[in-house]
Structure formats: C-alpha cells, structure tokens
Length: 222
Image 1 (cartoon, rainbow, N blue to C red):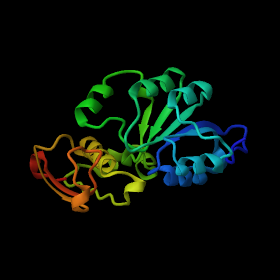
Image 2 (image 1 turned 60 degrees about the vertical axis):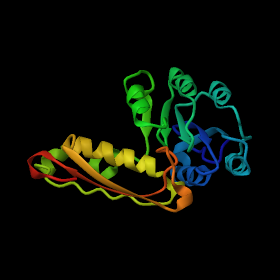
Image 3 (image 1 turned 180 degrees about the horizontal axis):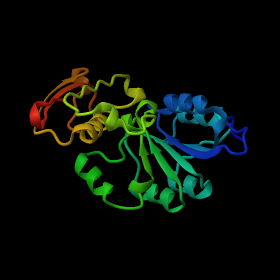
Image 4 (image 1 turned 90 degrees about the vertical axis):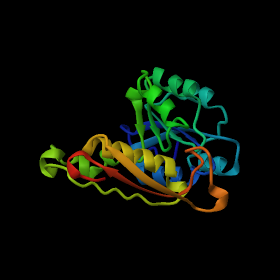
C-alpha cells in the first residue's frame, strides 16, 4: 500500500524518475495526496530514486518496461531529463495508460513533430508544464471571447532546472504562442548560458535564459 492510498476512487499511478527530478516528483505526489495511489516507483539506480520509492513504501525498479508490464496503471508519471525509450512509452499506452511527462519525450523538435503524428503516443500524452491546461485558462469557457483580438502576448516562465528544464519551458511557451496567435512571421532570439559549463549543442542540455521576440501579422508581437 502506498502512502498516498486512502480513497477507493484514487487514480493508480506508476512513477519513473531520475536523480534530477526525484525531489520535485515527490513534492508533486505529496500535493496530490489521497487522490493518487502509487503502485510502483522506478528510475536509474541511485539513492535519490531509492529514497523516493521508500517514501511510498515501494522497492525501486530499474527496468521501465518490466515495471509497466508488472504494474499496469491508469497513469504513468515520467520525470526524466534524458528521456525514455519511445517503445517503452508505447508499452504503457497499449495497456491503456495515460502518460504525464515533466520533460519533452524527444531530444529535438523534428522528432517531436514526427511523434506527434503517430498514435497511440500522442493521444495519451500530457506534457507538463502546460500553460493551456492551467486552471485560469480552462475555467474560461470561451477564452478567446474574453481575450478578443490578440495583439500582444507576453510569456515569462522561471524556475530551477529541477522544476523543469529550459527545453520544457521553451516548448510550452512556443505551443502557447501558436494557439493564441498563430505562427509568427519572424523571430529574434538571444540565449545566455547559465555558465560556460552549461553550454550545450543539444536542446535538452541547455540551461540559462532565452529571450525571444516574435513579430505577428498585423503589427502584433509575442
């Protein structure tokens, strides 16, 4: 029995987390409390992952596919900086599980676009953070009726790498802009690494700050 169990209608969840995300995953599950029942916890072999498993009275798993097969659940929470194998995610979705991911499931945008066109992953994937799934947006029955014509969009997202990578924040901000305004005609962007050690050739490895200005048709800006 996991620490979060306590209601018959609790949603069953299995968790896969790495060292960087173990703490924030633990806080997330604590916030959800009795509405979730943690069936299994796994991740790369490390003390932080083992501690997370013990918090929910579980033994840590180090094989994602085997954990999914042995513990089918309504939800799979994935917090992993390096991503996971797409075939493992398909194992979850073919069992009827919905995926909640704290990081993009691919290392680059072309791969994400390709995955977006392939079932069954896309229909059962819920990336987080997701501004368009926030309470303020969802509570507005017809948000565009309230907003009227969108002339200017300003999005700012800040936080530590443990609470969401720069890649995840960029992707969420970009998807939000596309829904609110459509594709900008041009974009000017500037990147500043957190330090010389944090410079990277891959999106997933970036940390620091990005400032971007998109020019919209009709004189608008994002």
